[in-house]
Image (cartoon, rainbow, N blue to C red; front, side, top):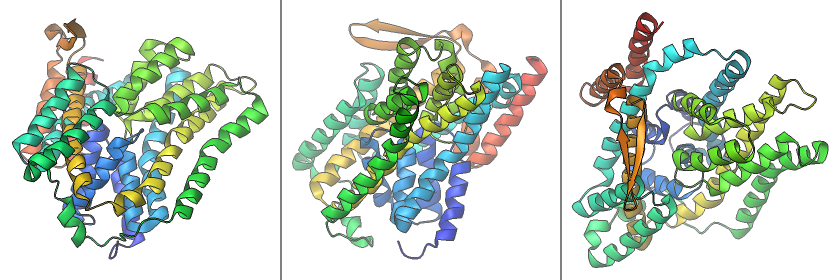
Amino acid sequence: MPGVSFKEALRTWVKIAALSFGGPAGQIAMMHRILVDERRWVSESRFLHALNYCMLLPGPEAQQLATYVGWLLHGWRGGLVAGCLFVLPGFLAILLLSVLYAGFQGLAFVDALFFGLKPAVAAVVVEAVIRIGRRALQNAAKVMVAAAAFGAIFFLEVPFPLIVLAAAAVGLAGGRLWPRRFDGGTGDAAARDPVARARPPLGRSIRTAAIWLVLWFAPVIALAAALGSSHVFVQVGVFFSKAAVVTFGGAYAALAYIAQRAVDTYGWLQPGEMLDGLGMAETTPGPLIQVVQFVGFMASYRNPGELSPMVAGVIGSIVTTWVTFAPCFLWIFLGAPYIEHLRGNKNLDRALSAITAAVVGVILNLAAWFLLHTLFGKIVEVHRRGIRFLVPDVETLDPVSACIAIGAFAAMFFLRLGMIRTLAASVVVGAGWHWLFRG
């Protein structure tokens, strides 16, 4: 993309990495605000086109979106910088918290600091749903698609890939019957965006796939050759490589699979510890799926072999992070040129516009899940006639967290205070109340 220096982009990616709280919904909304509204480096249609593709991939969609836009701006080096910086703050924060958790088993000061951050992050996610929904749901047809997606995942627990396929089918069929209602607008806008429309060379795609497959698996193969296939580092590398391929639908969908295997199959963690790790990931910057780093740390810490537990934990943490995020660069560097080549295709445009609407419903599900588990101490799942209901125990409502969430939402949505100021104020208020009244 012309007109954007690499140095300027680097400063922006550092800013985005530092502000990447709130899970995928908040992170995507934050990137949209900075890249589309403030910097105007990419158009609305191009941003949504990239987002639609990233939503179809396994793994963290927000990190992949950052990699995609970085690639648009400055090729592979831009994608590498954007993707790596997006992960780095969360990696360092969770590594520190994992060391404290394993070595000291006392995180009271962390609880105090993050007490106000959790409800504020929930408010960020709600604000993100409204912001993205305003742009993606231009008519009643797309609102209905979003509502159907929300009901399917929240009440019926339909897998995310099936929701995506159904939305694509609705977009294709609806585009033929009511083309104006399902046109995403990217077709006309594509002609105005500077983009190389030529089909990517097959040889370059093969080289890209070969390079990233080697980078992905070489560390695991080397560890297996040196330590044996039964070593915990190898088990962690193989397991999270599999998870990187099958975990569609965002972090919460992935965590059900990861928690079951890590707790029940391998015995790396206790159920309560998995929730502790999720709390770390929810209240630190970076992708929410970074919780897998905590799992890899604890698995290696408890099975150190001849190493000290802390050293083993750090190595396990690095291996887990590598095999989780290396595939993300493969998906983007291999697939993004083809997705850009197809921009402007009417059928693809209509299918992706319906998928975008469905994704709004999925993000709304995430916001509801996050709010319920942030504000209430106990949530009961009730199943009636195949429909799941999440029923909060009203007596466990935390009124202070509710007030912080409402205040944070009002500050961002009505007062336009800004995310970083809102989060900082929420941390101060929450920490002060926690220290004064909870000791």
